[in-house]
Image (cartoon, rainbow, N blue to C red; front, side):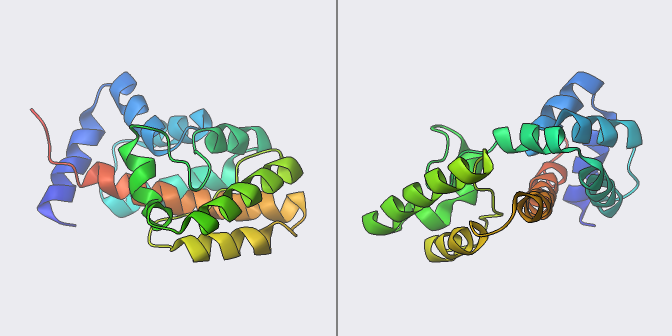
Length: 171
């Protein structure tokens, strides 16, 4: 663990509960997940934090997963002013208009079928890769898709938690 992540983890460990909850909510909108991590503080290492996140993710109910997904904008349409979703969806930012239009149609078809946003860990993926994943996953059963979403959320949470612990400690 770098000294920056050690100081960021120490900062997170000592945050007042409301402030820590707010930071966790930025990583994942599921309250049950955030409460699980709060209860497990303090973390000795960043890996302990990530393991607690994975354990909490595995325990989320369908309702908790729905709450988590509600915090994510559709692929290709990051929330205006939201640097996190814009950064994570950078692979769609430079995509051709045709691909963006295709992704919009897929998002709508996916949402019609499953009742929630198409969720994928978009970090490092191209627009084409996200489109191909949506095309592949739209044929899944709701049960299959719920578990894929759980896995994708876990990946997103790890990326976001890494950013959280890599923040320098603030006075």
